[in-house]
Amino acid sequence: MWPKVMAILGAVIVLGGISAGILTIEDRYAKADDLKQEKTRLSVHVIQDQIRFLQNQMWGIMDRCQVKQPYELSGDSKAHYREYESQKKVLEVQLSSIMKTKY
Image 1 (cartoon, rainbow, N blue to C red):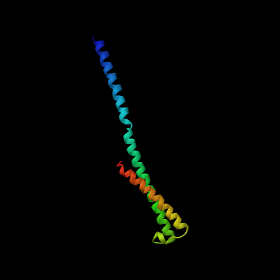
Image 2 (cartoon, rainbow, N blue to C red):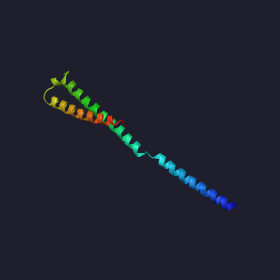
Image 3 (cartoon, rainbow, N blue to C red):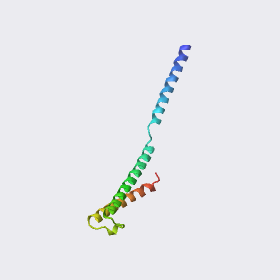
Image 4 (cartoon, rainbow, N blue to C red):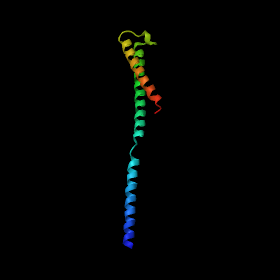
């Protein structure tokens, strides 16, 4: 009788260990929804950094030309400023569309 009880007890312990191991492995890795949310948050931070970079470039152009307003720029400086400004507007639209999804 003892060998049967020990065999059953051993089988229960082995099955419990296997199921616990599977559940541990499953909880260790991120779920698809969590990954999507993290990817969205990372995208928001990247776009915000790009917007900051473009704004700093625009301010740099104005500082180098020693002007207070963008309309006072001339030539290549004005072209670069407008290019940065258009890129910044595109990024702001992207950012607002991501923010509307309420990541």
